Length: 169
Ligand SMILES: [Cu+2]
Image 1 (cartoon, rainbow, N blue to C red):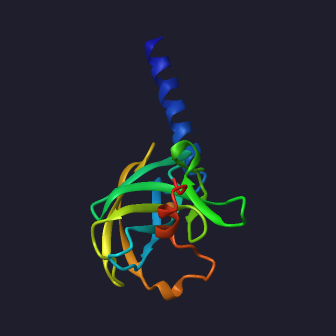
Image 2 (tube, rainbow, N blue to C red; image 1 turned 135 degrees about the vertical axis):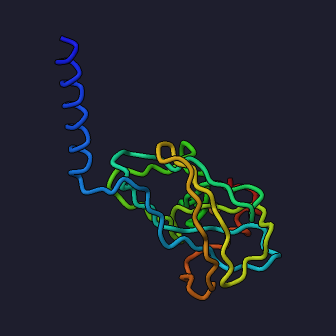
């Protein structure tokens, strides 16, 4: 009787493994194109952008991030304020949902990783380690590359200015 239970258990385990791998995932969280904009030391804050593809086979969440180059790191989103101005605020619930099999884009004018209190001067070509904390996938370090501001679309707002206005967070 014990043996049959064991066989059943192993069989169920195998079914589970096959079900997971059949969705085409490779079991990893993939972060690509992590970058931040260049900014003078006078600017106190910066923003990091990236694409996060969840191939883990399970829904996940980006819970938080830390970086040596920043005093505080927050997960932010842009939103429309009453006066037709773009503002930004910490994401609702404090996390970014990462549905299984989907790519979530952190981009200018949308979700971003906010670097509050820059310790380093962000110059083009610099790279800084950023540690991402996922609910299921655990901790992951990515390198953020600083790129030229000239790439930025005109509608992007100045994070530093918004934070200074008092309702930025
Ligand atoms: Cu922000």
